[in-house]
Amino acid sequence: MADLLPSTSDATAPQSAEPRVIGVDSDDAEELLGALSSGTARELLAALHEDPATPSDLAETIDTSLQNAQYHLKKLENADVIQVVDTVYSEKGREMKVYAPADQPLVVFAGDEEKTTGLKSALSRLLGAFGALGLLSVAIQEFYGDGVGALLGGTGGDAMSETGGGGGGGMTVQSTDTAGQAADAAANALPPGLVFFAGGALVLALGFAWWYYSNSGE
Image (cartoon, rainbow, N blue to C red; front, side, top):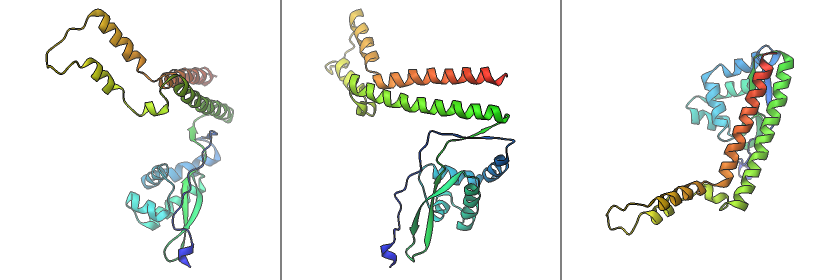
């Protein structure tokens, strides 16, 4: 009978661009900070950000007892930091919960409720903008570059083969024109998708920093 029950999980952590913002003076802060005050709890949370897992797997990963892992997982669950995403069964048919991080980024913010609400709205827009920027960067890399796969490969080998010479071992002196062409080739070697994403990310980061600075003085 136990063989008919799932023993492994293919669940993934839920994804959401909506952040969870908690003010340090809110009712939820005490439970949240209490759950994260233990180093073991933070290790468990970090492990879950790698992959969803059962308490026994987590206990083995961070080298602690099953009882200790279960204790801290329950506190994290009560604080809405993690959640159960699946159920699997041991060889003996024992039910085991599979945990994963909650479906929203977590931000602890010191400030009044009005500012906390504004920050949550701003973060939502910022995360959404980063998502759109990522998609646009992929599209630009596909249409104007060598495809997304080029980001994982290197171009240094081709450049070396073109400038390395015939292998005679002698030193050659490049002309000014050749040096200029080499510089242009190096600039053109940067993936256009990566350049677009880096520039867009800088603009978004500066915009958010300006917004935060402008509102922090109010």
